[in-house]
Image (tube, rainbow, N blue to C red; front, side, top):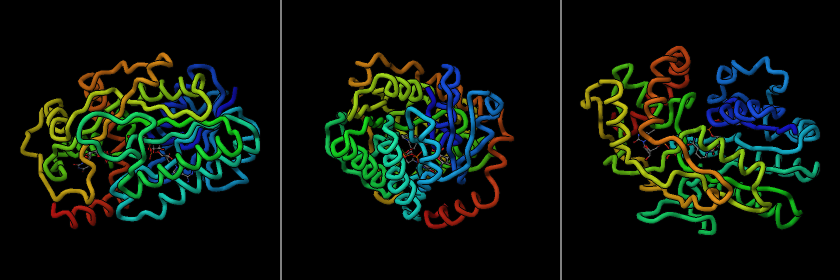
Length: 331
Ligand code: NAD
Ligand code: TYD
């Protein structure tokens, strides 16, 4: 079996590539190496004979088709993923997350191969209490979640119109080693190590269901092997932690003072709470194995031990974006 993994140089994709290789599956990794793509995430496998890397864009049908011909499945992680960036500049989200997914769907259809579309719990929108199941309506609120919801609908339309063998996974917020320092956990961990402020949007009472990245990757692998055609699978732990508690845990692990916390203006249209019901994926034999306390310790340790990985990132264009971003938010 050869799997075309797109976005395999990013955070979740790189962990997934390593999982497939461990299972002796051949992998072709197609990645455009945008700002968040990083081949250092795959250093330990770059010489593996079962692994090959192609630098290319999922919006390019020629490249995608050439690679899809050699594969029996596509797993699409490639995307623009940061809510704040999508609010500042939505266009690239529509191009990659919607048009790019369409190119992959076409290639899967033409070559009659399986496709797993990696989506997010954000497509359901916020829920004050309880949790969403897979049949609930989509109410995305940001340009990011709307572009992912569009890709989900396109994927389902390919199942219904062409009989494409596709599944969708909707996972909750991932965290772990190798996450680009724009999402709250790696941003706050690296800021705290540098003695910089941790800018919490609004009250900090917003909450997420944090899943350790390798737990999500194991679930995606289960869906790749056992998921039923046309089905959607939520992937989450069923437990929420609010942003203030996440932040306090990071500071405690780093033995840093809580005075680094700084409340700033809220994110526009901030989704208060995401929560999904995971009983469907559990029926395929999966369950989460890493508690938040274990996972956050592993993550904070990794960022402490791998300063060379993130210090290179937190320069140039990265700093320019944050300077403008925080100016707007009053930091
Ligand atoms: P990431 O930003 O770390 O990685 C994205 C990867 O895609 C990068 O390597 C980038 O170079 C590549 N890429 C971007 N545009 C591309 C294009 N046009 N062609 C080819 N490659 C391209 O993101 P991530 O956090 O690893 O997210 C991966 C997937 O998981 C996304 O689809 C995201 O929507 C989904 N997801 C993420 C989370 C999360 O908490 N991070 C939660 C749920 C779902
Ligand atoms: P983020 O990691 O951007 O993921 P998402 O918005 O996709 O859930 O944000 C997680 C939560 O942390 C969210 O409620 C917004 C909040 N947050 C902050 O308070 N400050 C920050 O600087 C960032 C990046 C996020």
